[in-house]
Image (cartoon, rainbow, N blue to C red; front, side):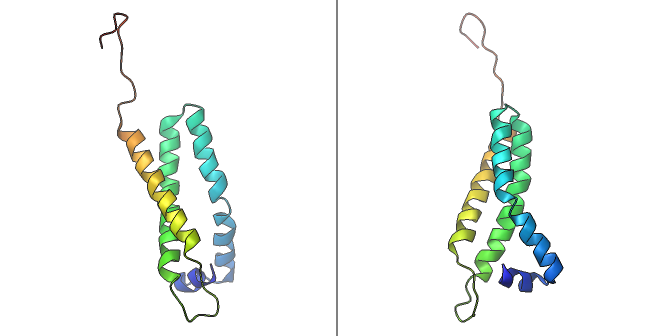
Length: 112
């Protein structure tokens, strides 16, 4: 996080805000899943789309900046790569939900 703060040009106050907000990533992901369970599929998909875009962008920046081998403090690539993979899957799922035909009518005779 320290390397990202320096890369993005954030001072210590802005960096602390970003770090505090980043803690909310997991509850937001759980919130998307709870919305899905409550059958609010489109709201969950829109939330996941926004969340995945933000988390994926930050994870991609962290993965790119994580390659400083000579630095005293660096970023482990495991976390950002896993977060980026989850963000890509979340975005793909959200797009699938938003573009899918959600309802099909079935007549009592069995033929659609």
